[in-house]
Length: 186
Image (cartoon, rainbow, N blue to C red; front, side):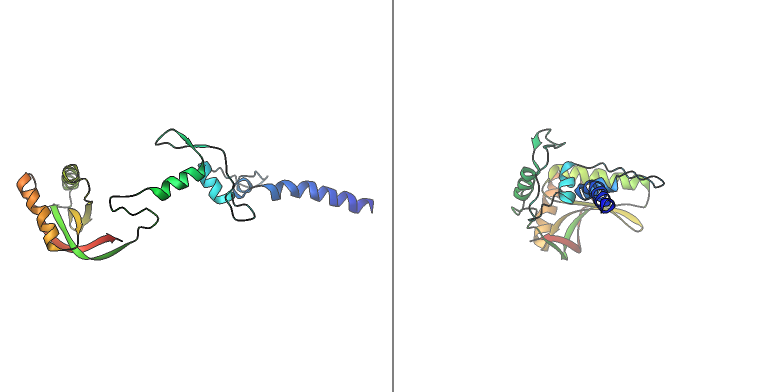
């Protein structure tokens, strides 16, 4: 009986810290004869991985400093900010979905497969982005050349209007309308 009580007490003392550990703490636990794991992560990620309470609610953790603002916010406040973040379309990030359809883009540049062509494609894309910040710019390598295309236009007329504006500004002599797959958010 005394032996049973001793073994039960010893198991209770040994198992309590193991069950009380979070998933990442258990991964980082040092064991003789095995490798070690070191995890560097933000407290909000730690909350996502380990912070579920028994009823499914997220357990609040200590305040987190966001690198962009330098201000301290709790993870719950960060979630509210992300949910309320809107784009130029007026949709929140959580409600945006996109599909690929056939549409039009303005091809600003098409070069060769050289390093200078790559740099020129990115430079032209940056020049366009400075003039039209709301339009997306796509710089890709479509074998055998570097291309820089802009916009996601559903109709030829939309693309034609922007092309006309580009021609009036000057500097985009190679610009042409290209029919291709475009990404449309809804």
